Length: 582
Image 1 (cartoon, rainbow, N blue to C red):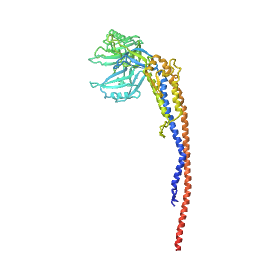
Image 2 (tube, rainbow, N blue to C red; image 1 turned 120 degrees about the vertical axis):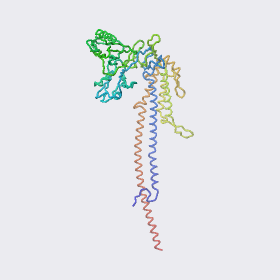
Image 3 (cartoon, one colour; image 1 turned 90 degrees about the vertical axis):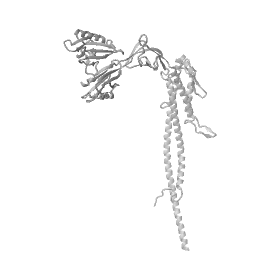
Image 4 (cartoon, rainbow, N blue to C red; image 1 turned 90 degrees about the horizontal axis):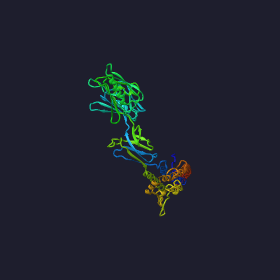
């Protein structure tokens, strides 16, 4: 017998509709109050989130106004051309008003080396080796593989993970050769780049102060040159230089170097000893346009060999190297500026806090006076930046007006038009907390302050409030107050005890962790969890209710079906009996 799957199948009555209607009615009775309460709770939660955001945004403007140094805004004015500026100066809150005469004597430079090679694609290494690059306190080592060309080595240098900013580039010259140019990327006195090699063949990359610029031949002298800092005494320890030039009994001689000797003095002593020894060797110092000096050693005779060595660490700078192809083209040096007669030095072109509260960046050397030829100074004036302070106050006013506008919308009740609810109320319609916050901020603005001895409220500084509670600023009046009573304006507005700081700290009780808004949110979330539990219980009740209904109507359906069957039997029996009697 096929199972009955729908109520009323046996009786022919639409019992399924009766059950569905009964369950729907029961569901409405149980669930609608819960759903309504759930929706209201979620709307309130959303409103509290909006309220917290509104207050936080308002507090941001208050905190900016009450922050330490908020009123220490400085304006920087530099007397210079805008098309080719000498300086860039920025001021922080530690800067004081004042004027400075600043001259840029020299920009910082990085260490640069160059070397000429026959080809960039010819293998330079027949075995594995290493090149180590050092500048100042930074260093990294590059692995060179057998068969590597100049191009391969350049790529290895530039892509090394420990590279401190050094760059290697190849310039293909018009005569078909390749010039390797290396820039250390690090500036500052005493931070010259040095390159050392682990194998003899990689010695072509090793740096030496005195590098060979002309090799000895039948038609040329042996010449070495080296780049040195300005020609000032720099030797701190006495020592000797041993010079060998050419061959023969007088080909080698020594030169005494004394502590405090300058480059020029050392060169003069070399020439004196060379003459005494009967040598043709000469030494010469050339002063370059950037203030550096080039030392030139010349064998004096075509084809003569030449070597110089020093017996102290300092004098090793004069040691000649005929193996390396690298020659120094620029020294690493520091930037020098003059501030009101005081010379300041920086490893880079930025002088940060050398003048308290100022960051000075040298962009180029100062212009020269047309008459004297000396460098001219640029006047830097540091003044109170009243426009930034005015903007800060205007931002506060704008944030206050936004807070008032948004809280008003958030707490607005539904309006009734012609007896019809417009459903245009806010998420926190009629909520007393919103009203309290708005009134609190307004009352604190109106409340006289004791922080200033000149002003009692911000409305004496040019701040206005219209009938709708909207603030505005009379900038002329405010700027006058700043000019005449700067400290009193700061006292009233700024600091943790000023108007802004006081309002901000008072609002903390609403927005802080565990604050009034958070407590309400926690309570509402607890309600939502409770409603969810009630909904689950109601669902279980509905299931049981439907089960009971189906059982009851199932029994009724069976009873009616049996009655229908009996009635059909009796009808059939009656008809049979009537037929037999006839």
